[in-house]
Image 1 (tube, helix red, strand yellow):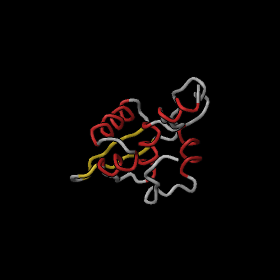
Image 2: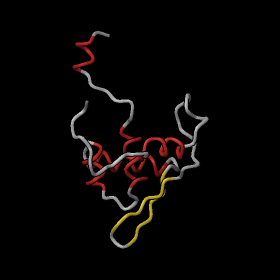
Image 3: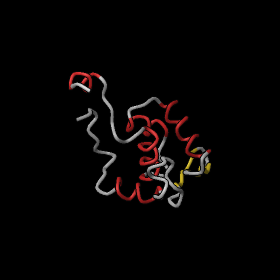
Length: 109
């Protein structure tokens, strides 16, 4: 792949699903609007990703009044065949160490 190609097609190691999971783990009472802003996706996309995570058992969602509260299930195994031997909690521990979601650089490096 040429350097020109990589400049026109940006990519990251962390998927939107992983980024949403990090947001929920960091702030269980976070609003979808805030998840979307932090991840850089639409609010509807954030809702779809949360639904995926809930459907697969990575997150539980409880309604308290008018708000949702999320709980990540750290014992769940990762999905990718190269990571199925690891629990989600290990990934979250690694990624959340030193992460300040209130002080994110909005532009990619």
